[in-house]
Image (cartoon, rainbow, N blue to C red; front, side, top):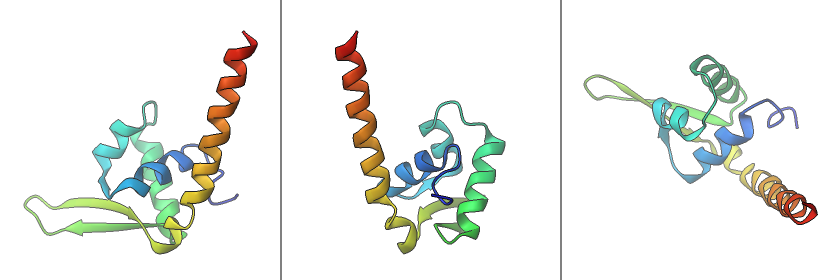
Length: 96
């Protein structure tokens, strides 16, 4: 839970589980996250071995982020959280 418990972390893992993304793509995928927070979370996930940061030799250089093998193992946990979230939303709608 320490790895995925931080604010925005599940969102980052969720989007990176689909494919590698550049910083700006992640920023637009996750409305409301600041550039500073996204940078902080990506660095934390990289330090923990969940995310791999790859600098592409293009002109100008670009950076892509992707899940490591270890990070990919978190996908079922994130999917389970999403499923429960959908069920909770359904219950709330039915209660209205």
